[in-house]
View 1: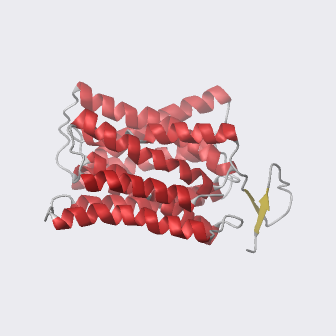
View 2: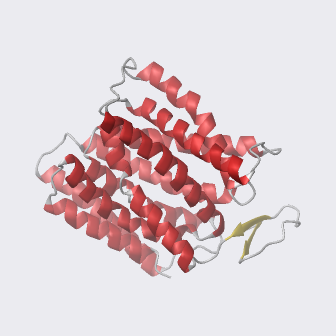
Length: 312
């Protein structure tokens, strides 16, 4: 692909007109960190569902990224990282912002109209799309047969949840399920695009501006589209907001963006298979949501498919 150069552990940015893409294999240390963030992400849909009891979806996204932005700005101050944009960076971040706002908006709105466990299964299909977009747009991260077989297996798990609902004539969750699945598609695209941007935009600066620019949009859309902001900030709702803000939008976003800068996007995705496992059982333990046979089987299929799709 013209204009790109794949590197291992080092690169020379002096080549004019060349965008250097770091595309290393995961080390054991990086794999352990990736696994830890995947476990934490398992609680995200549960935290969203809990917080939606007191805050509407778009306003919730605003609160989430206000707290996440505070976390990342604090990290910038500690690490003495400048957040001042260089020439040409703003337009590229604005392109990412479109994906970001659509993806988060669909996730929150979809989770409001389905169960947290189902939301976890559908959003955890994102490594399927990450692998697909990496195959298409990241040189050196192309897919072999095992990846395509894994994609089919993973998608069969997603279709099983839909099939179970249709067989039981359960229509209440269908709209929410589709919105979360669309969010997973956009998340896969966003991860690949983030990897491109992070090659020459400092990850912390990228996240600060992504969060900061999204705030007026989320709160503005909430004011126009959602019910009057009558918050019910119970201890559980506050805990859900804080978890999404500091743990997910702050810590996990910061870690993941730095990992994506250096390592293969598709290989990072393999560790997402633990997310639905933790998410489904947290939904059962904390929200008393039912564990249907189809949902449990879908967790195995989605996880197994993602693992197969990302085999070395």
